[in-house]
Image (tube, one colour):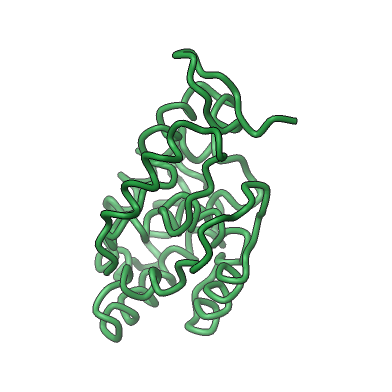
Length: 199
């Protein structure tokens, strides 16, 4: 089976971008482009945790609701959430109402705050796990680097950060370029990665 499909503009894209209408814009403008902003990195780790056992389409459809519910993923604010906030979020029909995942985001915000104090930024820590190899099969769901990052985060007390979740995060945030070889966005991502200043 081909790893690409032809989009409405006649250009080849990663096959998964055709699975839902909203995936096209996400694929073309976000997925794989390098991110060095702590808030966006934390948001993606949180959303990947919420996706566990669900589809990315479900999460993407609710992303603005998640941003509103979690104060645009402001790490310091979420770290101060209390049991009252958990109850508020469990009543919020706009997000995934899973107590374990909600509590994990609050816990992870506290761990992220500690990490920033130690490392200077979340980005500086996460980008250390960027793979050295350039080529990587798009069919992979984990890598040596995602296993290592997952292990390190868990050691620091993070939750819902298994190797598969972390690998999906690395793909989306541009730590690796997993666009299919024939996908026209791949070259754009590669160019963005070349000019990206590592934190």
